[in-house]
Length: 259
Image 1: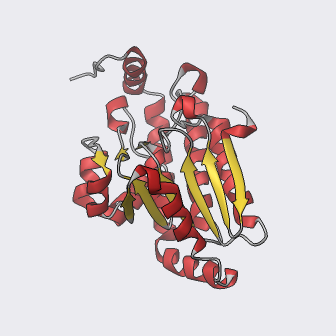
Image 2: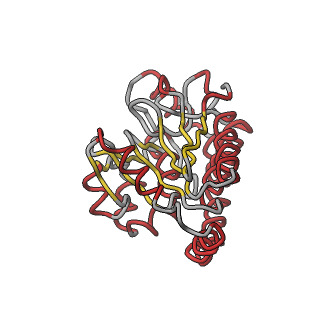
Image 3: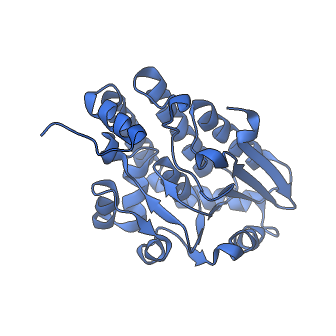
């Protein structure tokens, strides 16, 4: 993973953070997760910035953690470190002193869903979709999804995504409250940038306090959910079901779990 896996550019009051691993559908390994958290904090601290735009390069927003052999999304300490780094990136979005707008340009999968949910507004391309396929590879949703998802769309719909790995296309995501806007793919970045630039005349201190006020009540619950997810994920990452699920995914076959 190189430093160009997550890019930051600034245009007036808007800093754009772009996941830039299009060949891996913007899936991130441990270094990439850590870089994302760092770049988000960097963007939020740039003078004159009033909003951050988070998006992906190519045809995906973020495919979650990199489960390729080179990505090292395996069991043991490495796997737990990736979950912890993903949590840190989610918290970097939530704790940013300025609003963060997600421009979801394609599939948001796994912790990619959490990255979008952490944002203060989510503009999605009409071709995009959202999925939490963790149970299919012997894991549980992480990145705070166990708190963020029910808070956004309700328990029953969250169950459909977390327990049944249901793929949710953008129009349904809008109806469910998972995203704030759905636009033609060709208009996505312009629409998201226009929304983000709407903060140009705002007081940075007022933005910070307003965002804090909106998040304060749920902050403790989110961090408790992350701790619980990390504990569960740590045990599952070392278990036989994840080993089988990961092997099946890489070999493009159905997993064979115990009855």
